Structure formats: C-alpha cells, structure tokens
Image (cartoon, rainbow, N blue to C red):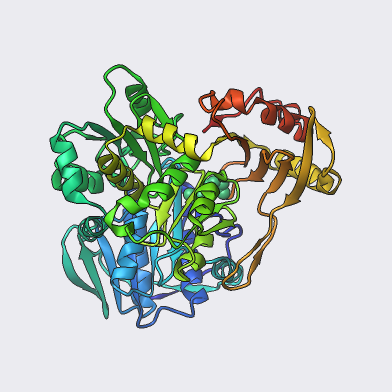
Length: 541
Ligand code: G1P
Ligand code: ZN
C-alpha cells in the first residue's frame, strides 16, 4: 500500500528557515509524512524530478531520510542524491543542488538548535537555485498542510545509506555520494590553497570547534588534510546525534570552550566555530572576538585578496538588524548595499540577479554567490586567505578596519522562552506607538525615525511586512526589536543595539559599555525588564 489516508496537523507553518519542532512532535506518526507530502504537492509534484537530500546528523535524521526516500519514490521522483550516512551540511547541500542541476532539495536540520530525542528537528526545502524556498512557496506548503488528506509512501526495505553509488527504490534511483568532496573542491576554486598551506607550514596555529556537528568531516578534510593544519586543529569533529550534549550555536555563550582557549594564554592565531548544519560561523583571533557584523564588513573590504573574488564585488547585502558597518565599505567602493529582512531566503533574488556578491547577517551568517546559503567554512577560509595575504593578525585587521571606516558598536540581547502573549503584547504596544516617536526624546537622545520594517524586493517586487521594529536616533544609533521565527519554545525576543563612532578616538571601548545609552533607551521605550520580570538577557552576542 502506498497511499495512506491522513488528516491535517495544525501548526506546520515554516518559519525563518523551514519547519522546526521538538523531535517527539516531528517523529509522531504522520507528522513528517504530512509535511513532506504537502511540500511535494505545493511544488506541483515531484514526478520525474531530481532532488538532493541530507542533514546535519542529528537524532531522527536517518529515520527521516528513509521515510522521505520512500515518499519521493512513491511520488514518482526520478533520482534522489543523498549524502553518505544522510549527511550534508547546508552549504554543501546548496552546492550539490546547483552542481547537479537538481530541481531542489530537502535539508534535515534545526540548525543551531540542540538535537536529540527531546530536542529539535527540522525540515527545509531548497529550490533549484540551491536557496531556501521563498515565502510564496513556504506559504503554499503551509496552505497544503491544512487540507492534506493522503500521502504516498512506498513499502520497501531501507536503503543502505553507507554504500556509495546507485541503488533502486521502486523506479527511483537513490544515489549515495561523498558529502564532503564536491564542497571541498569548490572551496579550492575560491581560495588560495597554496598560500594557506604555506601559512600553516610556517607554524600558523588554528582551532576549529565543530561542536560535534556536521562541519567536522568538512573541516578535517579541508583544514587538516588539504591545507596541512596540525592534526587536532579541528575539535569536536565527529557529528553526533545529540551533538554530545553541546548546543551547536557558535557564539560566545555556547562555544565557551573555544572562547576560553582563544582568550587564554598561548592562544592559537585564529579560532572559529560553526553550528549544527554548518552554515554559521564565529571568528576569533588570539584574545580577540569579531562581531559577525564586523566580520561581514572586513570580508567585504578584503575579499579581493582571494582568487575567487579578485574581480571585485558586484554589491553587498545585509539583513536589516545587522550593523551598517558593511554599508560603509560598499559606499567607499561605490557598490550597491541592500538591506533585507532577517533570513537567508531574502538574499536569493539579489544573488541570482547578480546584484550582490557577499551577504551576511548579525546572527553569525556570512556567505557569497558561490552557493545560495550562508556558509560557515567559507567564511573561515576567506578569513584565512585574508590573514595569509596581509600577514596581519585578526586584531590588527579589525583595528585597521575601524581606523578606516569608524566602528559600529553592536550587540544583540536575546530573551528566550518568554510567554507568547507577553512577548506579543510588548511588541504590539511598541508598534502602536511608532508613529508618535519621531522627534521624541529618550534619555536625552532624539528619535529621528521609527517604523515596522517592510522590504520591497527590487527583483520580484514582492513585499514582506512586519519584519522588525526600528527606532533610529539622530546620530544614526538604533535599536531594533523583533521576535524570533526559529524558536520552538515560547517566544524569543531579540533586541539589536547599534551605535556608530567615527574615530579616531573611542574605537576600543567595551561594546556593552559603548551601547549603554541604547540599552537604557530600550528599557525606557519597551520596558523589557519591567514587563518580563527578567533581570537581563539570556544570551548576549
Ligand atoms: C535566526 C537568525 C537569522 C537566521 C536564522 C536562521 O532567525 O536571527 O538571522 O537567518 O536564525 O539561521 P530568528 O530566530 O531570529 O528568526
Ligand atoms: Zn545553521
């Protein structure tokens, strides 16, 4: 029997990055099946199509892969290319879709959220360009989940996901591929591998924390095997179903082992971490943390030093809450700078249209037009290439950058697992007052503008409303408030803080101190502490 009757399951609405739920929810009978069938249906079916499939190795990923393969076969797909062991990092999946000219792909991951029987799981559909499905498609998927009445699934034994090569599932070919090789080859075309090899051979020391997640095999192959970094450069290198209990989010809070090493005595020259599915990155130097917004700006300013970008950049793009540091680089270069809503899917049109080469988000995401996802190891390699080409340390590069462009002090404060009603009320009340705020004074600072950010896509003219509340002060300092679209527990309030200092004085302050006036303004305007009863944020990045 391949046709299974089902009924709609509420709440299958994809968020910022696919559908994410607690694993017990996703693994309940019919849950994954409903969502995958709704996805296939929303795409107009998958008959005769080629799909890419893989994930970050988290719990339930292997079982989900078998289910999806059998559903793809029953739905008439011609071929599914799947990473060995059901592994594919998100950027590698994006590359594979493009390389093989596939119609699309399914990525099984909840990104930086913890994994395990009681933790998180997720499914995301990517299009033929290798990028996340745009809102029109995710909305069509959601609409379909609300009326679905059957799904198709072949009755067949499991596929051997350990064996490379072609196998058959009904009439469909399952092609199991090395998850790392094609991606590593792509990196070799973009960066000066001989120069990086020479740098490592000369004693350059690096620590890469893969957080027991998917970048382990990629980082070992590229850094240790192809570039000759010392064995053991990559730590937590084996993807584990529960990430060994780690929270695979590369930020100072969750990558604290790496932070301690990089801030300690005898620190390596360079440190990096990546997340569950390998699209995020955190960059560190000896005794030095690089905020993601600064990382994006430094990469944009210096990308031409890497062979893949020697011709210069077509433009840059950043998500609205990301600091404007990269805009200053673009202005100096005379190239376009775009401001999009949060979420990588909004960069896709700009990249496809050749309107930007490098893009990034404050949430530890940077990437370029080489794929259609953010790419953690790509950022690591571009930093390494810049270090090799300039001979400077991370701290020197940052100081030089600020001296040239000024510094956008930046921080994000997250309040996790708030009661949903409380978070909605906080946002709703502030939204209602936005119109009255321009011209008002808060703690001696004048508000210049306030709005609920809406994005007008310059390529397809689509409009995305309600993408975050912005309050901008007379000196361009700003605060932004928005609710997370990736959380799986209550509501997560994100407060983004930014203040620009032109220099040459005042470029080396502690960010939290430099941002104290903005932090106080948030309290005065939105009453976060007063309303939530929290004494401070749960995570500061
Ligand atoms: C978060 C980040 C966002 C990123 C997304 C997926 O989304 O803020 O920049 O694109 O994860 O990695 P949020 O939870 O804020 O909706
Ligand atoms: Zn991720």
